Amino acid sequence: MATKIIDLRSDTVTRPTPAMRAAIEAAEVGDDVFGEDPTTIRLQEKVAQMLGKEAALFVPSGTMSNQICIKAQTEPGDELLCEANCHIYNFEVGGPAVLSGVTCRVIEGEYGILDVADLEGKIRPVNDHLVRTRMIALENTHNRGGGRIYPIEKIRSISAWAVQHGLIRHLDGARLWNAVVATGIPADEWCKYFDSVSVCFSKGLGAPIGSALAGSRDLIVRAKRIRKLLGGGMRQSGIAAAAALYALENHLERLAEDHRHAQIIADAIRDTPGLRLDPPKVETNLIWFQVDPELGPAREIANRLRQHNILVHPAGPQTVRACCHLDVSAADAELVAETIRRTVPGMTPVA
Ligand SMILES: *Cc1c(COP(=O)(O)O)cnc(C)c1O
Image 1 (cartoon, rainbow, N blue to C red):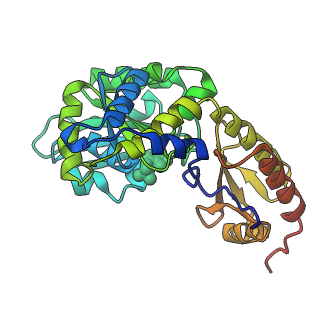
Image 2: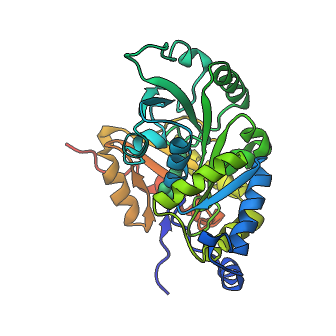
């Protein structure tokens, strides 16, 4: 048997389980561009109901989902307020500018989390010289913020502030499911403070493909047109939707296991001289840590762990990300923790 690789680079690396593959095989399909794919329709209804929205739309990726929501709710020359380290601004190829003619005004939060105080004064006055501040996007959990959960009272106050200023509110909920499971606050409660929401099935939930956006019926009609424009109209999409449905029905509660496994690995990092958890508290399935330059660059740690069949993501010169997911067992997490404790302190310091 091939050596098992424990792949912590991302929670997107999961493979469909045999049961998920069986659900894919059994999926009833039709042409979804004609609105005739029963499995996709079922998924969209379930997502809308879970998120407490009128309707939802299945799309190929979280990037497309976020960008459709921006395009559907802005005009060129509008401005989007977002956190400086958010996915929409940093990791979506400049989508707001390229696809919507929208500029981003970024505001640095504390590990991705903003306060109303950070936003006060950021609405441009009505003036012929100025862009129109039109929309705000929040990310929950926050990837670059270390998988942090947005405190719900902050969401409530930011949402109230946004409504007061006539801003459209968007939630990038790629990992909203992790926040739901970690807090016990249901998805529809998190979502009721937003006009549009994007969620992913291909992260911790373990589906191979797909995201969904949700909002009012009118938003979804416009979103469907934009999905077609962007080339995201899919035909027998029930093949992918079946996996997403299976994931929602069978892999949601188990995200708690990923959170427990992340704690096992976080403890080892906390105990290892030269490594520093950043943020210091691990709240969900993501573990971000800093490597003291004395131990070498982040990629050196990644190389060292790779020799032990453990893959992590060097996300910056001294920054590493590790993710727990469906394909990482408790025993795997213990092995990773043990390997870090045993091998990292012995690394030869760079001269
Ligand atoms: C992964 C992710 C997305 C979407 O990514 P895709 O790879 O396009 O599916 C969006 N937002 C956040 C916070 C993410 O982590």
